[in-house]
Image 1 (cartoon, helix red, strand yellow):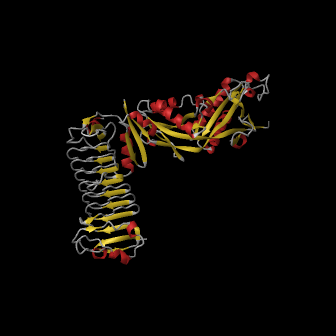
Image 2 (cartoon, each protein chain N blue to C red):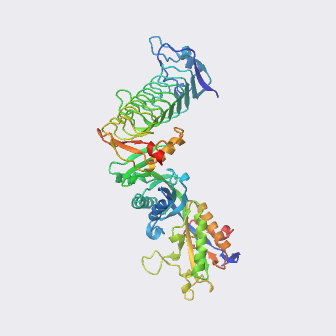
Image 3 (tube, helix red, strand yellow):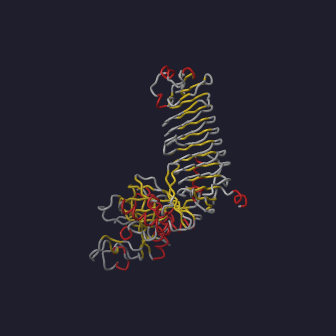
Length: 302
Length: 276
């Protein structure tokens, strides 16, 4: 494979392959940012990959009190799924179990999309007849009485069909610490990009996968070409100086958001340099036949 | 294009029905046709030309220079464009408005904004009784839009209100929110006797504790709810008030328990705000 070089780091001339997804966003507020984030973190737990979780979700950005509808601190959460029905199902159950239940929470639409998805419209029944509907300023809200006051929730949020899931970067390093250093730098940079989330733990995934496996029923299995312990026994993508690889997976509200996030991640890791960070940067794809969106690393370099 | 302007020549000697002088009704009419429209309601009814001097051509922007308490049904059925009355109006101004804006620089009579369904109706002075309410035989009152009275509103404000926002910014008479079905009524200043009398659902939002609540309203504490700041922001964004109405932790009464009891009176806690 041809390689470029930036600041002493090799960049594979390859591309990340990503897919069209359905996405929505909500704004969660609470009396303090701590509790807004707590509701958001709980709601986006077990939402790393559509393969096993039904959706991919994470906090997009924290919002100061001046930027939220009710003047309390909050955060914007994005949720991605492969289909509208699954997205609605995940949104409803996560909202009901994780946001409704969180102290002092309120929930608002975070996206003006092409179609509405139910928020308060499905949770209002928890009010058992005492829920209050309020329509003003062109919006519809539900107020559900709960034990600490009221759960205020906008009736619907928006759905976008322009979302993209599966943008990624692979950081190849001499050891685990250096790979993690590089990946953490990338996560910090990508967190600042609006409309892009990294659904894996802390934004980082260590078990990158390939499609299928030798066992029946396995949709995905370990990416052996990038597993350093198998370097000598499989067709490997690793050179002898690489002993750890970490990946960042990016879902974006639009294709542009994914590209901006990958650009920011690349820049952060390249600026950090190879001494304590990555020796080489690559990206994952399936030969270009499965995903509609291709992000070539060489186009995204600083 | 210059606003279509009706300048009052002299105070009318009969009540006038001005429901025909709206953007939709006047579209496509010539100046002569407009001046011949009959607006009087007596046995020898006056026409537009007898009462007004007409100038301008833009029917989507209608101005009445001069008003009278005999101007009834101003802006009936307005659904787009804007109307401004520089003076007082009579009864049923803005009846069944569904869009556009109607601005009355003087005071208005009874049944102002009756059954309005959308748009914005603003009165600089006072308004009479049954603000937004239905006429006899009609089941529901106002169903949408924003109705603002900068002065004082009369009795039975928001009778049978179903949706939308009514604001009376210098107080209101007795029975505000009478038979309310849903919707929101904002009152700054003193409220009369028994606000929310027979209300089923909906919200009465006051800037002070009601002086004479009905015995069928029950105190519900001082809930810390996000709705109060959300609605305060809406009121300020719409230039209805220039400072928060409810503030945090408003006081609450629930009622009217003489009917379904799902309505509420939320009011600003003045004492606590001072000590905070």
